[in-house]
Amino acid sequence: MCQLLGMNCNVPTDICFSFTGFACRGGRTDEHRDGWGIAFFEDKGCRVFRDYLASSESPIAELVSHYPIKSTNVIAHIRKATQGEINLVNTHPFQRELWGKYWVFAHNGNLERLPELPTHYYRSVGTTDSERAFCLLLEQLRHRYDEEPAANVLFETVKEIAGELAQHGTFNFMLSNGEWLFAHCSTHLHYIIRRAPFCKAHLLDEDVTVDFAQVTKAHDQVAVIATQPLTDNESWIGMESGELIGFHQGQVAWQATTVSSTK
Amino acid sequence: MCQLLGMNCNVPTDICFSFTGFACRGGRTDEHRDGWGIAFFEDKGCRVFRDYLASSESPIAELVSHYPIKSTNVIAHIRKATQGEINLVNTHPFQRELWGKYWVFAHNGNLERLPELPTHYYRSVGTTDSERAFCLLLEQLRHRYDEEPAANVLFETVKEIAGELAQHGTFNFMLSNGEWLFAHCSTHLHYIIRRAPFCKAHLLDEDVTVDFAQVTKAHDQVAVIATQPLTDNESWIGMESGELIGFHQGQVAWQATTVSSTK
Image 1 (spheres, chains in turn blue, yellow):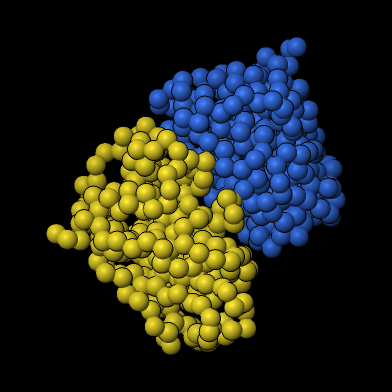
Image 2 (cartoon, each protein chain N blue to C red):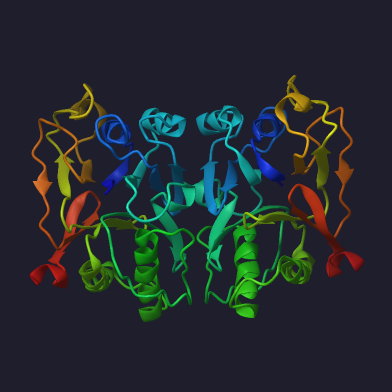
């Protein structure tokens, strides 16, 4: 399996603190050492850093831990391979363009017997179930809508498609187009909303503390989503199996349960 | 305008030496300080580093200069903005998926009155003429072929499309799908093929020398392509206006002149 980390905020924020703890789990405090990646949205732009090395040993991860890139939507992933070789092409997050925006996706879980890709608009490059699920999702969205629908319509459509795909196995995923971040839980996903009054947070995986009161403004809102909580002195909310949450501007904007979870 | 750097080899090779000189031109030895980017193909995988900071001042460029990523196809770009704001979304190289492979493109020049994008398969995310030209090129390729044709057929088709696009202005570009690298010259593009017997090379932009005899094997072949020569003690070949070269395995595999140059 793998682990996921996401961030969605109302003002561009760096993820150095959370990523420092998360990157430890890629080979030091946990076993997810088969590559890692992180995508930062900056307005419509997106940059993805990835490496097939363990995040705890990668010079690129070291840079990302210390270089404060300000972003409103971030998705990161550390991999423990289930399907597909350990190489660059199979590292998450995956990225494609849809409706004139970049879309980024990372997955934790294992999907079996996925349907064949129609390969009209989107094709897999690597060999993971995850990239194929992403392409299937985008293909369906593109088939249904020629232009991007309203976010609540998108949320409903993603809920429906995610429910279908989740019938093929474990499907914890994060998806973002730079405006919102959708997080779907099959087994493990937790989140926390940080807002005023801000307090100190201490990492679980490394002895690092940050006082958010010192580095934020009063109206800042930051949602952090992770497979397992990253700090040991805050109350993380565990998501339910089948729960899909749409985060927008650092808040829970949409919340629903996919069909598959009602089985 | 901007500057381009490309590398195509028969064995995975790092580009640290060439990139060190090239990155100086992004704000130190030349004026191209409006962002930069570099794409490395590793088998079918591709990683793109990009920044809106000048390459001579970017911590990410510093990492890329010193971290030896081994790749058979590399495309890099330093930007001096003509069309489109200075931001992440407008930094080259651009990347899309076509026929189950990643395609990477960078452009130096200025294109006016480009046709509207059909927006069936590919849409621009940013506001540059360059990204639009890339999308127009991919759109035409995807319309003509459902599956990837042989490389010589692709070369002929790209020649034809590049000739049409070059009628809209200056169109120096590099394009790669990880197997070959196509370079098209409108105004300035030079290349060198390094093969045995290897000798020492000295950068133009910084006092750095490398002895390639120490870091290569006898059968290595490396083509380096750049807007302007990067070394002061080697014989770079200047490309002709309208010339398109397909590099494969560190050699010139295909060579032609686009229609536009015969005007």
